[in-house]
Image (tube, rainbow, N blue to C red; front, side, top):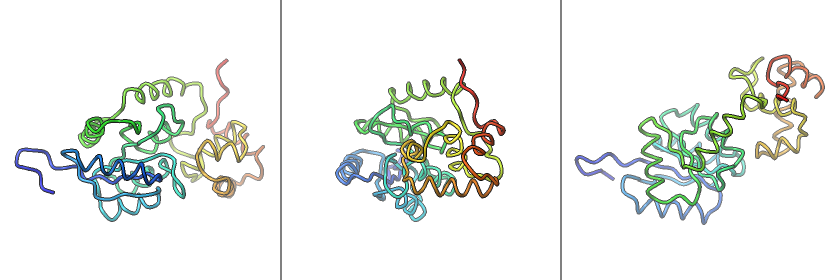
Length: 228
């Protein structure tokens, strides 16, 4: 699709959502909007990453909770491997705990799934112009989360000892005292995936058990006591 002379080029978009009805509804809505061209649709994060590699879209509209590879991990892979593609997160609730993780992973826009067509177009255009495309409710939630960051445990910007960002996140949550099941729920991954991350970070750091992991996390400044 070629834009008329004088109008901005249509933004090429991939839609990623594991719910077929939702995904098809978004694709249908976008097809009616000026300035947007849907070039692909994915049912999970793995497929979203693959389509970005094949189609080089301008923007991915990314659901957060999907099987095989969630939206946070897919966003991280896309931003690392295909920096020319921006990510706008689509979430059901503005207080979704994955929002802050998606921000760290490189997402630039955040919309709730009840967003109207005009709002979606504005968010797409905003991230393509280098700005953040934030729904008002989500912007408030992110500001609240940022204000809490001073008293919460966080992974350092550069994980130690060759840990990946996700391994570092798992280590921080171990330091907070969470079980594997709780970590899996918080990160929206399977317990088996959490165990794999733990085995990998233990191998890289030479740790032998969770008690050593907690001491390590404190020693590296990855976990801090909460302010009273």
